[in-house]
Image (cartoon, rainbow, N blue to C red):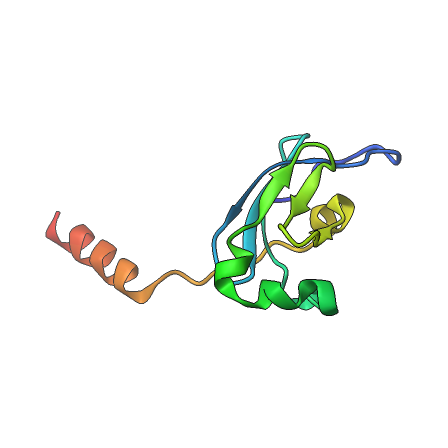
Length: 107
C-alpha cells in the first residue's frame, strides 16, 4: 500500500495492531494507513530482548494513551518510525498457489 500524502506536521497514531509473524505486525494508523511491518531490525537493546521470543512478541497491543504499539515490559516503537517503515512483502504459500491453480483448471 502506498503512503498517502501527509502534512509536514502530521504525527501518526497507531489505532490497532495485530501480530502476524514472529516479529511482524499489521498496524493501522489514525489516517487509515494500514501496513504490515517487520520489526526485527529495530529489536536491539535490553528492553527489546524479550520480544525475540515469539510468545512474548505476541503480547503487543496498540495503546491509545501513547498512540503506538507497546509490550508489557515497557518496550514500544515510536509511531512515526512504524509509519515510515517499508511494507513487509510476504511470498504466497506454495500449497495455496497449487490449490488455486487446480480450482482454475477444473472450471
